[in-house]
Image 1: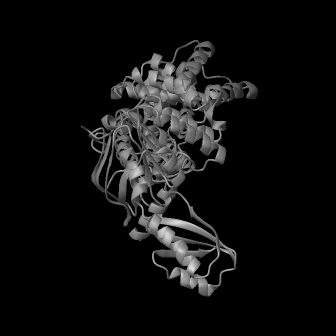
Image 2: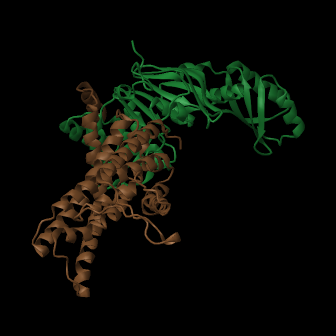
Image 3: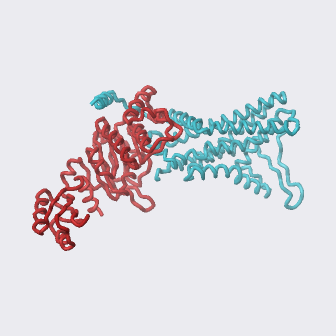
Length: 311
Length: 285
């Protein structure tokens, strides 16, 4: 069976800087895969190669089994994309822009009309269908961008940080649209550095750093595999530097950070047992703990752990 | 729940559209480029400039009490003298930012991931630019020839030949504009360079070569002078240097056949280079 997205030994250099370094990745059919990594990890560069916006230095990228560098027209035929925050032709309306994109995809006029109505409804832009895009806000443009990506009902949708630069309301609305995409028939690859967004929306995750794949799998598998957790602790008495020094020496503890006279956070390697043992050891040190809770999402812990290891 | 039900129903009748042939896509790109020209008022602006130029040239002799030429060709010749200027403005507006704007304005993020070959995008855009420019020239010449018919009572066949040469020159000028647009990083710079190249730089080079007694047959702006020269009967000829010392300057007239060949060469070379640069250009920013 042909994978919808397959990246093989992909490398991209920019004037001596290696943005993508022998990247290998396979995206499963009908999965919603989060492409995670810190800024500069190579997410956007990889996606730009996948969408024929950049040429790789070496390696290959396949969409539905077709090499996008060798045959971009065939490879992109059944693909929808939102890369960076695309701009639109300011003098055209959403209806005209979608008709333009639909005609380039070879859609029949009747299908364009039907799908334009459907996708504008999906992204809640129906009432703006005949207004020129030039005056639209960034959030409205992003919604039109998603609409044009799914207009021709592609099997693969590639999204590059679709909520980037949006205000909280815009982010919420776009996430809602992404949630709806998950219920449809698409294979989605979405880059992001927002971990809660990925954990909320995605079924699968691929983590990259410095242009290399660190880990990939389903969200459930990866979060279950992590043995690093972040804990926030509050005590009755004020903590001294001596006490904090002793706590940082405890087994499995790292990255101790003081938030105030009675609050501090630590990273703990180990499972539930290690967490229970830590609480007992803190009390043995004379610390009167009144709050001992896990902070952050599991994916975040895994992400931080892998990013730190890769450095 | 209703939304999900609709979604499933929608997915079940999904049909995969197949990208049409390159030729069909060229037509699609050209259609929407023309729509953009219309909406941005570039085309209407050019038509307004044409109307203004014709009005000025026609009204001035009346206001100054000067008679119009009695011959239709001579009448057309006066107007043909301004065609190259119109073409330069047209090339700046229709070609100067055609490629670079997709990169600078980030609309390339929308267009380039579509299943369209870069050459089809280039061809569609160029077709639209050429169509817009031809429309401007046709309006100009149609008005001038009609005025000539009314005022002199004759029809200028040489005016039609001038129109054909003007069309060829406009394609050459736009090809160079596209080449500049495919190399430059900013739209303003590309448009200024296109305008300056044809209005000043080529002309300065041509003038310097003429002063050195070298016929600048290879310069596209010199070749473009046939647009006016063709309306003169008989066709003018080169004149050797008259006078003495630094004032002894030759007067060269472009040969029609050579000029056509030069313009065609500019079109072919410029468009090939444009495609080369456009195909290799990446959406980095």
